[in-house]
Amino acid sequence: MRVIAGKAKRMPLKTIPGNGTRPTTDRIKETLFNMIQDHIYGSRFLDLFSGSGAIGIEALSRGASEAVFVENNRQAVDCIKSNLKFTRLNEYGRVIPGDVFHALARLETEAPFSIIFMDPPYDHLWEKRVLEALAASCIVDDGTLIITEASLGTDFSYLDTLGYEVVRRKEYKTNVHMFLRRIQKEETIK
Image (cartoon, rainbow, N blue to C red; front, side):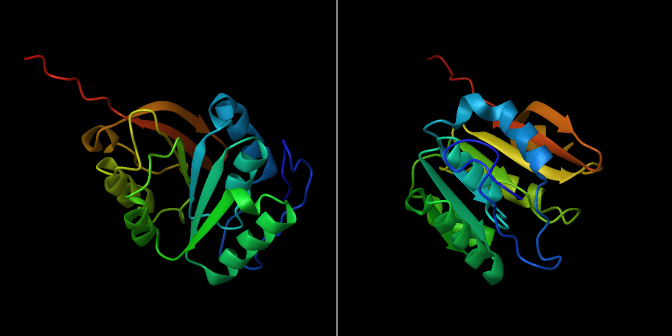
């Protein structure tokens, strides 16, 4: 696994051994970033269920102003920190070890993120729980792009109910990227 483009282009990234994480392949990562390239420069990027940190590091390499990594696996947290240091992007990255929901609560006092990416363990409904938490969160505004990676058969029929619209859907052989935004609420005229 490596950084595809930007300041840290071609730099190899460490991953943790075993099945504790499921790294996004370079090919899928490249496709993802080609689709969001116009949104990256200067963005605040939140990488949930970060694993090795490859997605957030790619965003930093391509010009994101800040990336926050949230991961509860201690070995993966150490891997993210090591990858940030190796790519010399550590001054732009912040790692929050621990549970995603505790991290989201800690982040509530901060400005909204431009992009929120999540790659939770497949088929455990984590994406739904996180989207429920983000639906009323201050770290999301009408401009925030939320990207969820999930297994291909994941049910997203609830999105409308939670107040999200699908901006784009990109299917791969076994997984999918869902690009979402909160539905803008129309202001009532008095």
